[in-house]
Length: 83
Image 1 (cartoon, rainbow, N blue to C red):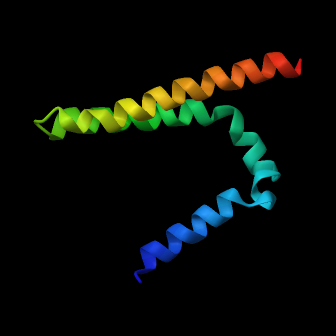
Image 2 (cartoon, rainbow, N blue to C red):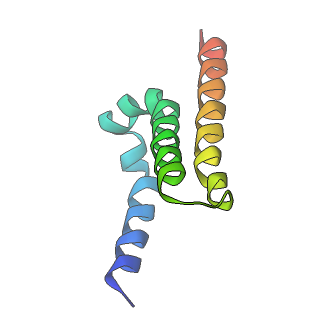
């Protein structure tokens, strides 16, 4: 088993743990998760457009951008419900 798989399993366990979800860091960045996903998608899109010739690689960056937009919409709806 490679060390990358072990690190991935540890990362998934850590992010899904209750201690992390209730931490100050996680609660602080939760408001910006949609924007972070959009920026990752945009930077990946620029990389794909500049360095590849095929259109099949565009699905992943566009997916990140769409997931980021959905996260922003969900967060705004939840804020209206809480208020």
